[in-house]
Amino acid sequence: MEKLIIHGGLSITQEKDSSDFEKNKVLRLIASESFDILVKKNAKKSVLHAIMMMEDNPIFNAGTGSKLQSDGEIRMSAALMDGNKNIFSGVVNIKNIKNPIAMAEILSKEENSVLSGDQANEFCKKHDIPDHSPFTIYRLNEFKKSCSGKHGTVGAVAIDRRGFVIAGTSTGGVGCEIPGRVSDSPTVAGTYASKKSGVSCTGIGEQITRQAVAAKIVTRVDDGMKLNNAVDKTIFEANKFNYSFGLISLDSEGNIEIGKTASISELYYAFCDGEVIRSFMV
Image 1: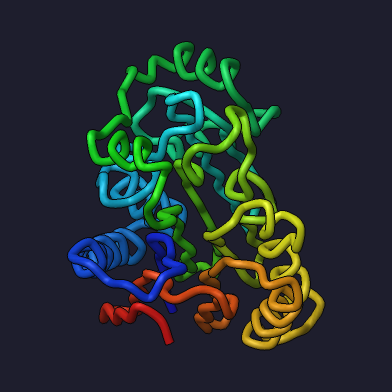
Image 2: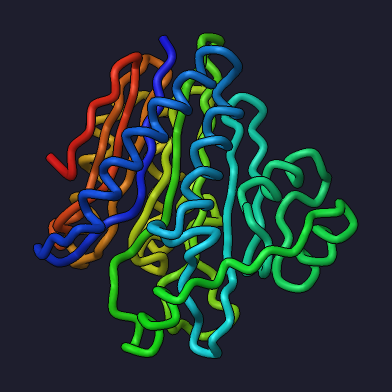
C-alpha cells in the first residue's frame, strides 16, 4: 500500500508561465523516482530523496534557489517528522549548505533535535557537511525587484508497506523577510505526522502557524475524523481569516488529500501509487 505525494509550492496569481510547466515536469520525475525508493526501501528514504531532489533544483524555493532575506542573505529551514517513532527534527535559518532536510534527518538521532542559526551551522561543521552556496542569479534579480515571485516551499509525505508515515518540508522563506524570521516549515504547524496520517504545508508561514495546520489535521485524524473531513474543516476555518496556504496529506489507509485556501490559485504537486498522476490543482 505504498503511497507518496510531493509538492513544490503554490501560486496566488492566476498567471502561468514557462516555469509552471517545467515545475510540473520535474515534479512528475521526482515523484516517480522517489516512489521507486519507497518500494525498495522505506518511507523516510523516499521523503528525503524527494525533498533533496527539489532542494537541488533551483526552480524551487528550497536549498539551491532559496530566496534572499532583507539583508541579502539566504537562510533556509527544514523539518522531518517520523510518525511511527513520534520524532520531530529540524533546522531553522541555516546557511550555506546544500540540503537542509538532510541535516534535519541527522538531528532526528540527537536528543536536541531542532537547531537554529549559527549553532545549526556549527553542528554541520562537526559532521563534516561541506559548505555550499544556495545563491542563484534568478533569486538575486527577484530580490532587486522587491521579491516578486511565487512561493516554492517543497514537501513530501509517504507511507510504506509497514504502515510507517513520514512527512518532511523544506523552505527558503518568503523573500525580503526580517532576518531570522521563523517560518512554519520547521515547526509542527507546517510539518507533522503520526501513525495515522502526515501533512506538509506551503504558503504564508505566519498564517499556517496561527492555525497550527499540520498538527491540527493529524490530531483530528488521530481522534477519529476522516482525513478528507479533517482537511476540509481546517481549510474552512482558515478561509474565515482569508489565509493563504496549501497542503498535502495522506493517512494510514492510503487516502491522499490536497487542500488549499480560497485565495490560492495553484498548488503544484504530484503523487504516486505505482503510476504518477499530476494536476496543478483540483
